[in-house]
Each structure stands twice: as structure tokens, then as C-alpha cells.
Image (cartoon, rainbow, N blue to C red; front, top):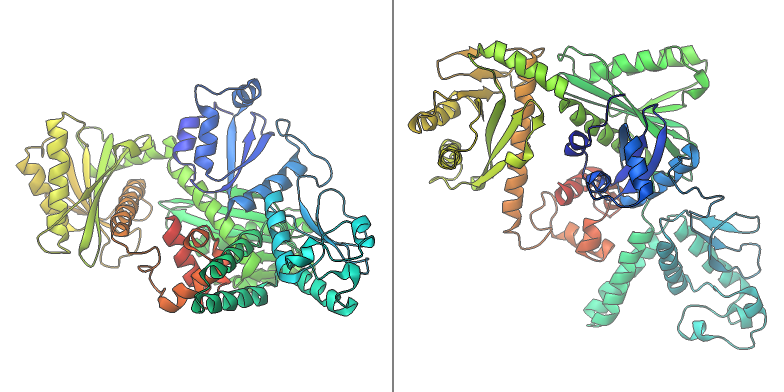
Length: 607
């Protein structure tokens, strides 16, 4: 295995929560860790001033790093623990039993059950709820359960020797079963409600708290309303659904595919008995012409019908969408295995979360592949051949414009060379055309400002100036380049979507009148598509940031979220901070918020 290129890896590592695995030259896992921000955490290992002999020894042995993106840091924590238990990496601290997992315990064998914090082995005579992400989450949940259901938390020795109610009864945290101020039946009902709540059936409790909060607010009891708001926020924080551990169990493979610019990655996320064991990336060879359904169908038939241990194939395979040949494939699998197997494409809840995780990791793997130097060198060479360039092409700069109805337009300029995207050279321009939505004038302004400054500061000029647009946009950019007397130092080209607007059939426009259609298998076109898409992404994020400065609140400009939904969201989560930190699954559990709107909200807050 070649020496690990930390700089190249970090340049394309996700800035999302997840788990990372550090491998040595033999492919053995050295260390498993979790992070809120994968790039930031992994970057700390490869700094020149790293302290600690153990860390330095670990870094010296790293030959590869694999990452798994998760929906939240809590999910990353539980997945990290699962992987440490199964892989037992030499550089991790290894714990016995379940001491890394805190639980809530209810002593159901008692006449008056007790609720308490628990670590360690689970024994008969009690029900356990968890695992929870942290001890703080358990204690916060315990406090809520005591407030809402008033279940005792005292030790048995204290409970048996009471002759009068304690302080917990006075502050309405207990119903005083020790002195029989509550009947055994009523107390059992309280305990059952508490167990239902801890099992995830908390909608009824949340609705009741919401009603009380609204009533307190209408009654001008603002301190009480604030207390209830905080309780709602705490419920959401500690009761978030964990998709790396599932009480329902089940053996599932979640399979996702990402294909772009002639490359494809298929990701298989393996879940056994409700627990994520890990994921694996496959890179089928393609011609660049196949769509995602074709790639996925070919992969499924070869992977599951090949020479494999039949017992390792799960009963259910979750797919991102229904495939044209799905029925035939399912029949073939059942015949091959001699048992029932389900190909599911319409899933919700945990299975949708697993599929989202597989999709996110496939996207991350594809981005890393697209940035690989070998691919880029081949594509730059293909572009030189296509354009019949007199000199080597080593640097490409691409411009794109983004706006909403002509307002707050932003122009992006991204830079690529044979090592990939040079993000330190990226630039954005807040452009102000005379008429809102005039992309031609906005483009002229951005190109002029960019290269006037480059010339003034004696900066580096591109070998190719790429414009995301057709013949008109290309000509306006070329006019600016001519006016600056730079037309003999760079090529100018536009990339349009073509008559059918299908990827792979783009038309390239050149100032000499040539119109080239390289075709979907062209390595040169794959490079240009990658650069153009990055310019488009960079322009959109810049425009959103500019538009965000003019917002009056964090919710008012989100598409599809009106006053009623805003109220439901804030009531459910208790505040904007908790709402911003919610996962897609938590958002979808709010009344009136479907899966599509939940995706819109999550992307709005995180992109």
C-alpha cells in the first residue's frame, strides 16, 4: 500500500458527523473514533505539532482512513462503540461488559417499581431502556420521567423505612407509594406510562406538554411556559431515535449508488439483528453512459447471485428506488437461495435512515474518487486532445451565476488543476446588474473584476476559462477577455446542456464558432462536468449565505414552511437551537411535517 496522503484525503473529507477507521499497510484496523466534524477531527492527527507518543506512533502506521457518515454525533458514538467491540483495535481503550453504555432501569419485579440509572450487566426482574449517548442524557431523561410520571427513584432501604412522605413528594416528583398515598393500581399505571414513554411512544406526553405550554402562555404565565418549553426541548434531545441500534432487530442490507462523470460507487450498509456492522464500497467499471438503475441492477445480480455464503445474504435488501427489473431479480434470488427474500424500495423510519446513511457514504466515496490524481491527469489529457490545444492545459477556472428571481445575485469562480479543486483559489462576487436576473451583465462584471485584479496583482491566469452557459454567455465572457488583452493567454469555452438537456449530451461552444459534442463516454467531458457542477454548488451556497443575511428569522424563508408548520416545529422542539440540531427522522415526527419537508428543513439548516 502506498504512503498515505493526508492532505489529499482531508481536502475531500466530509464536514459531517461520523465514524473513522485508521488502517495499517495490511488493511488491519488500528483505531476507531467518532467525530462531530470528520474533517476537523481527522485533521488534528496530521498537524506538525501533534503531542503524545501514542498518537505519533498511531499516525506513523496509518496507510488508509475509512469514514462512515452518520445522521448525528450521537449515532456516531453508538456506532463507534459497536465497531470497537467487534474489531477490538489495538489503539482503542477496550472496555468489558456494557459499561460504555448507560441505561435506564425500572425494577418491574418490585411491588412499587423504582426507576434508576444503570451501567453494567442486565439482570432479570427489571426492564432496561437504552443505550443512551451519555450519562447526562440518562439523568436528564430520569428528571423528566420523575416530573411527568412521578415514579420513585429512592433506594429500597430508604423506601421501606419511611413513615411520612419525603421532599420528592413535596416538590411533585413522586406520589409517595412508601406511605401508600397512591394505590398500587394507579402507581402501576404511572409506571406503564413511563415505560411507554421510554420505549419511544412519547407523542401523547409531548402533546400534553405542548397544550400546557400554550395555556400558560395565554394565561401570561411566561415563566411556567418557559419551563415547559425547556422540558419539550429536553425530551427531543434525549429521546432522539438511534439508527445504529434497533430494538426491532432484523437483517438488512441497505444499498445505494452514486454515479457521475464516468465513475460509479455502490455502497452496501450491512445491518444484522438491528445493529450496523459496517459498510463496503464497490466500484463497478462503467463506460459513463449507464444510468444509476442500470449500474445498480448489474451490481445486485453479480453480488448476490455470485459465489457467496448464502447465509450471509439478509432477508431484506433496501434499495433507493424501484428498479425496472426488480421483480425478476427478486424471483431469481429466491430461487437461488431457496428461501424468501424481499427487495424493498418504499421504506420509512429506521430503514430509510439506513438507506440515507448508505447514500451519504456512496456520495463521499465518489467525491474522493473524482479527486484522485490519476483520473484527473487522464481527463486533462483528454481535454487537450479534444480541443487540439497548442499548449498543455494545467489550470481551469469556471464561472456560474446564482440568484432568486434576480435578487442578491452571486457569481462563483472555482479553480481546478491536475491535483483537483484548489479551494483556496475559489472566489465569489456579489454582482449587481442594472436589471435583476440579467445573467449576461452579471457574468461580465464577475469576469472583469476577477481578471483585472489578477493582472494588477500579477496573479496566475487559467489555461482555460469555462463558462456555465451557452453561446451567448461564452461570447460576453470572451469580449471581456479580449478587452483586457488576455485572449492570447487563455482559451474561453462555454458548456451548455444541449437540446435534450440530458447529462452526457452537453455542447461545448468556442469563440471560433466550433460546437463540440464529446458524448457521455468522453473523459474530457467528465472533467468539464465536474468543474461546472462545483461552480454551480459554490454559487448556490454563496447566494444562500447572502440571502440569509436578509432573513428576519431562521424559518420564514424555508420553502413549504408556513405559519402553521413553524408553530408546530417550535412547539415540538421548544426553540430554534434544538430545531437546527434535529435529524431528518426527528423532523419527520412533527405533526404536519412529511419526509419531503423534513429533508428540505434538514438541508436548509446544514447546507
